[in-house]
Image 1: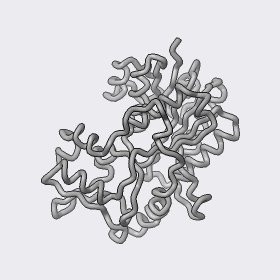
Image 2: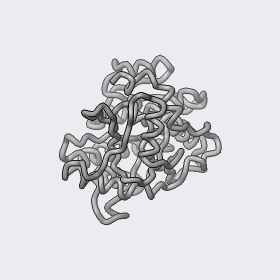
Image 3: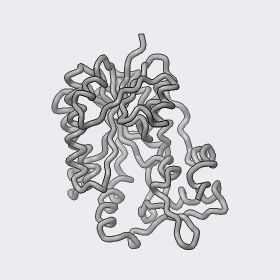
Image 4: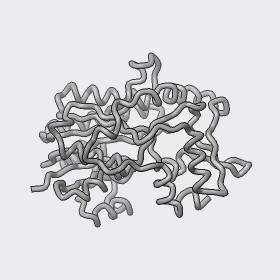
Length: 292
């Protein structure tokens, strides 16, 4: 009998990659939790066979319904820098999910976390540290847990969250790494990695897995994008060009993150071939950047 896996964030990038991968595996019945079942993304997943439950992190009863009868759950959160207290809100919401999973007797929780920058580097990075605090809470209440850690994913370029068109008609990539290399992956491939983790619970329970398909500089990313989306020209941003508050937040991320993958995707034997950035660009060539 297929096991039920409940996916939070399934209409977003990470959760969508996980939900779509699990829907290809007959060993799992996929259930997604969304604020609105009427969105195009929720409907698309439902048409593929996912069960849809309307709920949100602030409604404890909806979390209980979502996790009832669940074997496993994938939990991730999307912070919003517009709320000055986003880190505390995130901690409150996701500890609620953890409590609901504990009460429901979920056998395997896969949580998308990030490193504790405050502990490792000695200075804060709120949207990393909040996830690390949630991870600590999940461990403290004894959840059967696997931690996964995503690097920046290629799909961020497609959504334009990392790309800004400049006055000279070039495109700037908002990763001021100043020549340092960073890990990257496609959320589609990472989704299959999470599927393998759910399928092999005994092997991955209690472990932390950092995903990486490659490690390239932002200039190398820019060169790939420029080649395949010509005549558009892409270039990395410079830290000196950011506003002061942006520099403080970016420094805490970018000084730390390229050097601390917990493991690599290649550990998972049952995964598909890792995607390259060029594959992602070519696959979605008619979307996003092409419309600018």
